[in-house]
Image (cartoon, rainbow, N blue to C red; front, side, top):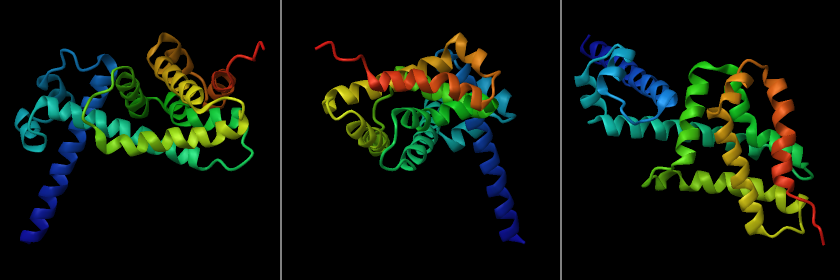
Length: 210
């Protein structure tokens, strides 16, 4: 009986923690961290301030955890998409894989889109001290470069890294800009059809004038 009660308490605690993270992500996605209050988060999550202190310690720690959680989810999804690419991949196929997590979130809306908007805000102003995720950032970069160095052998690696960063910045802007709201009304297939040629063009770069 005691074990069963302990399990129920743990489950209830996990639900509260998950609810606080979800509410924080939603509010961060709407307007960022500036001015966000514990009262807003706890009211949205149906929890109390003591729960924030118990599970996270502070408002800042809760926000940091939510953002890190969102960023890791995005990186994992992008790693999975890019990792599925094999030899002889076209720039269009690379662009589709690179954008797949963002495209899926735009089409799905709700919490998925909230996560991606939070990721986009982080991409514009990255937080410091998240060395734990450095390996995943490097993995996505290397997976993209693996395709680009074959498709564009005449372009040096530094420039390919620059193009990859520009493509990522474009996705960040897209999900936060008004056009992102318009795209969210479209199907995933339609969003991909619109977006892939633009990203492929960013990877391709301008034709040489020499």
